[in-house]
Length: 244
Length: 198
Image (cartoon, rainbow over all chains, first blue to last red; front, side, top):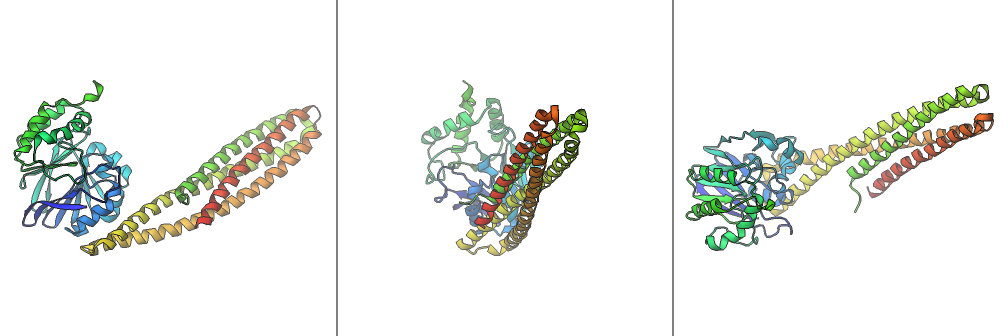
C-alpha cells in the first residue's frame, strides 16, 4: 500500500493511501485518506474487507491506533466500508460518520463497538484536533445518501466517486492532462451518476469552495487548473444514461 | 477444506427444523387415530391407549427439536463471532510481521481479539458437546417411535372393520419415525464430520 502526503502544516496533514501493488486481482483500486490534526485522526472511506490489513498496517506508520478517533464512509458501498467489522475490533472507541440514510444498512457489515454518528441530509461540521471538517452533501453522486469531506484550512475536497477514473494501479497520482484523462472518467460518471439535477446542484456549491486539491476515491487527484476544468467538463456531461 | 462450523451448525438446525415439522405431523396422526379409535369402540381399546403414547412422543420430539434448534442457532452465531475474532487476530498478526511502528497502540485490540477468540472457542466446544448429547436423546425417542409403530400394527390387525384405516395410521407412524430418524441421522453425521476435522 503506497502512502503519499498531500498536505502538511505542523501536525495537520493529509495522507493518501492507494495504488497497492499487492491488491487482490479483480477488485477495484481505491484511494483512502487519513486526515490528522493534533491528537485526532479520521480515515475517509477506509475501504473493503480485502484491504483492511494492508490499510491498517500503512496507517500505523503515521498514527497510533488510539489516535484514529473517527471514520467516515461517504456512502454504503463495499469498496467504501465493508471492512467495518474489522475496524470495529481494531478501533473500539472510534466514531463512524456516515449518511443517516444508510445507518441500518451499514450496520450489516458488523458494528458492535464503534459509534454510528448519522450525518443529516444537509451535512454538518465536526472538529478534528485543531481543525474543522465539513461534510458536504453529494446526494445521488452516486449514492442516494452521499457526502464529501472538505477541509477549508488545507483546501482539500475528498470528492468520493466524483472525479473518479478507472485506470491501472501504477497510474500517476495527479491529473496532468484533461484531454487524455476525461475518456477514463466519462463512462464511469455517465453510468454511475443518475441525476443531472443533482450534478448541477453539487457543481454550483463546490464552485464556492476554495479547492487546492480535489481527491476522488478512485484514480488521479486534481489540482488547479484541472479542478475547474473538471467542473466545466462535468457540467456539460449528460449522466444517468443507462435508461436511454 | 473443512466446512465452516457456522455452516455445519446452521445445517444441523435446518435438519432439526425438518424433524420438528415431521413430529407435528405425527401429533396430527395421533389425533386422527384417537378419533378413529373412539368411533371403533371396544375393538380398538388397545389402539386408543397407544394414541396417548404417540401424542406424548410427538410433543417430546417437538420440544426437543426446538431446543436443539435453538442450541444449533446459538452455536452458529458463536461460530460467526469466533470467525470474526479469528479473522481480526490473523490480520493483526500479519501486521505485526510487517513492521513495528505504533504496534503498541494495537496491543489492547489484539489482546481483546485473542481473549474473545478463546472465550468463543470454549463456548463453541461446550455447545458442540451439548448438541451431541441432545442428538443422542433424540435417538431414544426414535427407538420409542419404532416400538409404538410395531404395537400399532399388532393392534390394527385385530380391529375388525377398522383394520385397514388403522393399518394406514400405523404405516404413517412408521414412515414419520423413519423420516425423523433420517433427519437426526444427518444431523449427527454433520456433527461427526465436524468433530473429525477438529
